[in-house]
Length: 501
Ligand code: HEM
Picture 1 (tube, rainbow, N blue to C red):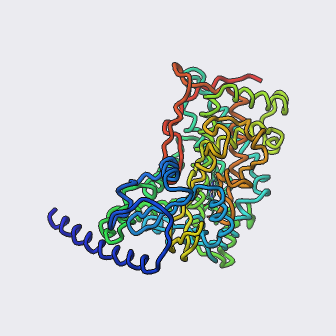
Picture 2 (tube, rainbow, N blue to C red):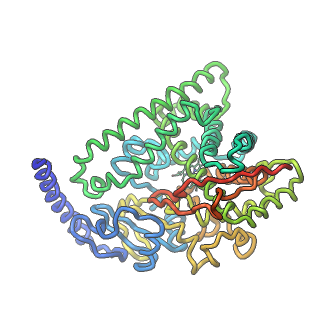
């Protein structure tokens, strides 16, 4: 124990020396840095501001320090931007300069030091991966080929909930079943396969691996080694756990999913799903096999839970606003007539349902700070110097919930997107509303996420009256905030009273 303390003290001293050198270098360059709280030696602002830099804490700091401010987290610089103009500058005007992603010891393990697409730096590798992923995942043709599958999955959710007698009386935690639906929506696109039930062993193993991957990479536990690199040796055990999970998870992708597609392709020679396209790119030598597995990794991380959180929030808001729920139901009935269920092509004829989806993404933005951006070289923002390799956070949630820019933003009011904000779209034609980012690093999955959310909410509202559980008049919408996500804290129990058409 004593030895460990001595080791820590020595490492701390060494850290102080390193930091002093870094500070001297920065001062030497005479940077004009953005404003921010005065920091302490070595740790910078870390102990002042804490680990949990969620969108609401950062909004409070923006009110104090302005539209751009700098926090020093040990050796890491964190720049937070909180105005539509600066968001435009980071995401669009200087999209190349600020188009990289930060890396750290844990992300390096899960992405093989940036061999993936989501977390890699801006450059040739990212361009190639994004190009290779576009045709199999992110085109209108993919939507056209898969939308019947999404409609079927939504219908199966409705059937399962209807079969459960408790759903209409005590209520169900509907997220559990919707999670299976989201895995199926994505695994149908990726591997042309689905899981039959929430009890499927492989599904549960996959889900557990993905949850552990998120937990380990989003935890604050390893911040000290990231912020004060000299303490990194103390992370040995933590990083060991990451390595172990990474290899078991990649092996699962390989053995149960990728191998399967290879066999089918060898037999039929047909291209049926996204993985077939990706394997074809590997055969042509455009990417290697590790890249193939990292694409599977990225889709598992980026696509499933984000969409699921948004659906969960949408349901919670519809339960808590019965008048809005009734309006959605009435619109569907009027436009589609009796007996027809919502399909993807119907969505453009259902503006109120679309407004509900947008309002959910605005008030309950799933990735409120976007995926952090980074500048590889020294840069400039709003006249300030931004040192190379700063982590840049765009507080997209604040932009979409700022009372100076929106009418009564804390109300869930879909009507705003049919009235005063009717020109505003989710793909980012207005920098106040960028739930999927904008520009080079924006979310390519928007093309799938919007219809999946619309179809799912549409089916549920058509089929059930969604009500709070017995004894309550609302479901709890407390946020479980984090640096990477904004999820509902308590997965809501919802009474689903069947509506017979
Ligand atoms: C409601 C659901 C979703 C939300 C709110 C969402 C949000 C986001 C955001 C905010 C970013 C980062 C933008 C930036 O850094 O400027 C992002 C990136 C990304 N998303 Fe999504 N996303 C969703 C669904 C999906 C789906 C369904 C997929 C894939 C099928 C997907 C794939 C990706 C990928 C690959 C990136 C990285 C792009 C890059 O770095 O070049 N997302 N997403």
